[in-house]
Image (tube, rainbow, N blue to C red; front, side, top):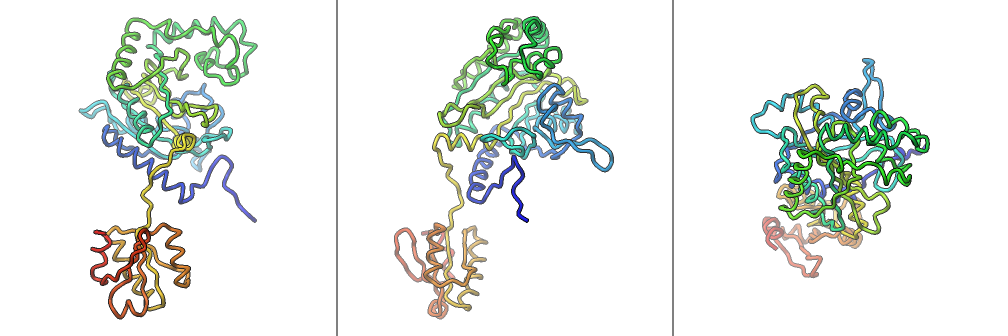
Length: 421
């Protein structure tokens, strides 16, 4: 019987893994400089947390969650996103009581959604995200957007577009909601069953429907920006002002929505504009939320965050033809000619590795020529040859694989030689 990786998942082999590590290293460094500290939450949570924290009218909750009942008859769900768990931890551990607010959190790890597999989208995927909870300052909206943009820029992406919008405050959302219902209700029978269900529960999500996106009513739907009150408009202007100060280009798109009820004010997406990327261009999405902390049992604290897929980041790099520089280079390959030399090779390899020198030796009992080919294949910078004469001389023949030059170096001086040449 043969086994294959489950549909919608993937094996990340060593060659690709080095790229993942480079991206994760970049992310962690930027989070450190922006002071977003890592939080690690469980891979599964109470199902109700996601029903409350993601929204029971969303496709994620209605169609995509991996939910199971455990032996204690509790309903648990593999996390489909990271915000709900981070906010739950914020409330449970009373981080709102810390003297320094906002609390700035970051996370990176696997998420799970049962959705149709397509390029860069998997049923198990890795998501990086941040949450800044405890501030209503528009400057932190710009900071969160800046961090997301800098991740993409630092790994080498250039074909990017930032789109922003304002969803207004609760008063604005209610007025817009009523206008949407009045707009769509006379013709709701023309829309898909999902949109028909959304009309009363969350009509804003109709605007985000992929099935009915070409319906003419989408173009003429009331725009949120037409309903912005003075406070919301001022807030949005401040966010744009801070983005201008940071030199971050953006487009305002009145049709950009975040469909959850507790989203307020700033919403944004970062898209790939590379021609080879595909039709679904979104790389990252985020927004400001008010009410979510209360929804999971905490005080009235505002927050803002984003989430990005690492798979889609790598796909965007591929579309732009960009290569990540990884640190997986082999420094030393030790060629051993006989059993006595093999023992010395094992000893030297241990010494080199203890000094941080990436080292490999032959474990296949190959001839010298085959070992040299293996060293070349693996891109070794140096090859050390050990044979009967080298053991007698207490010195290794050291070959520079780039220049082809070779010299004998005493065993006791090998570490110094390799580190200084």
